[in-house]
Each structure stands twice: as structure tokens, then as C-alpha cells.
Image (tube, rainbow, N blue to C red; front, side, top):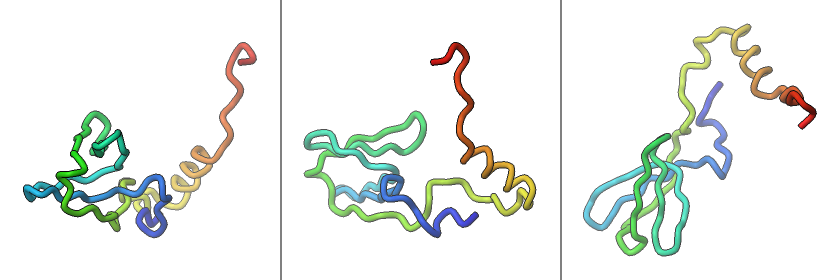
Length: 93
């Protein structure tokens, strides 16, 4: 329910400040001498490591807020759905 209470290490969002003063935030992956910042589903920004002034982890989870508003039953149903094993695919594969 509290998304930012415990963030898995592979889902930590980072805030990057560049030497020119720009900031970008999101999931960070390394590609050679560049950082690829995944800011959203269809948005990524590449930043040269030499242009990075500061990089720090965000204290806020990427997960949306508002789960408390679902109510106990809907929240339980959602958690059950997310943790339930997927049914076998048709055709035995």
C-alpha cells in the first residue's frame, strides 16, 4: 500500500543532474559510456557519463499512488491477481 516504503533495488529511480544544469529521472541502465534513462513507457534519454554532474536515488517509488482508495476487498483481489501463478497456456506450451 505504501509504494515508497520499500523499493526493490532493480526498480530504484534515479535523478541525474547534468553539467549544463538539466535534470532527468527514471530507471538508469548503462550502455558503454552513456547512461540510458527510462523516463516512461516510450521515453528514454541518453546522457553521456562525462555530462553527469550528480546522480542520486529517488526516495519516491515509480509505482502509482492511491491503492488505499481501492478499499480492502479490491486491494486483496489485486494482490491475489498479482501474486497468483499464471494458468498454463493452451496447447501445453
